[in-house]
Image (tube, rainbow, N blue to C red; front, top):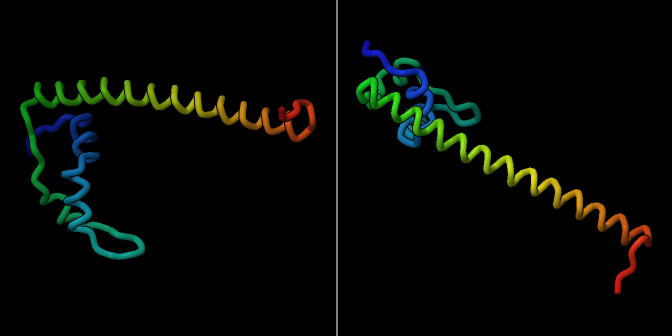
Length: 99
């Protein structure tokens, strides 16, 4: 019944603590599921409203930085793959010779 920040709750639901708890309480093999009553019975760590905001803001900042770094690395990988294909094409077609 206590208010929990939606952003804090989003991060909490992505945490190992929560996902491990869901896994432990899931049933089924090919399509595991969890009973709604089991889900709502989980204890949720609820810091003060200000702490929830600070945690969510901190994670927003850090996750944003990580996402930007991943995007930069993916762009570099794509450029290297294009360069690799270009080199292969040039050598296979005889435009460049192996020395």
